[in-house]
Length: 150
Image (cartoon, rainbow, N blue to C red; front, side):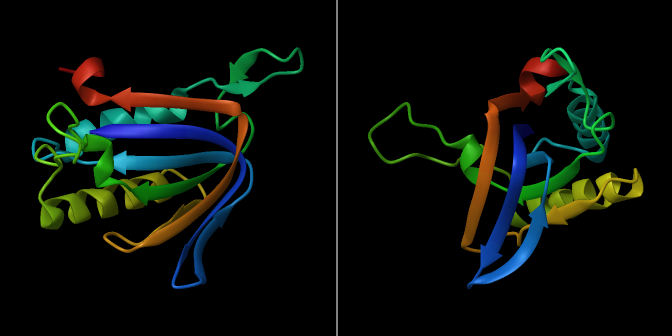
């Protein structure tokens, strides 16, 4: 599983011109799922993401978590995080999760974040989405379960 976490001052996602999700200060997270991912692994990734201290404190140091700033979440499915560009010029997505399983895992992650008390907005799995954001910093962090937990 890969979570590309972007610290934002605002973000939104639209499908067919209609806004599906919109947040203020918080994380806009692109979520890549592979076939080996499980709910247990998702729980670990969510916990790691929510503990990231990447918001500025009063001295301008990145010491605050999303809890500390009462931040919001915009979660977007993004199979292209598993693009393999080693051969040729057309990316392969062999390592991306099967769409049926990945959709279930995406829904699990959304519901888990909501159950933890976070304002959680979302995109639409498999849709052609238009994502807009103001990356605050810019500050972007990649959480990769292969590096963190395996």
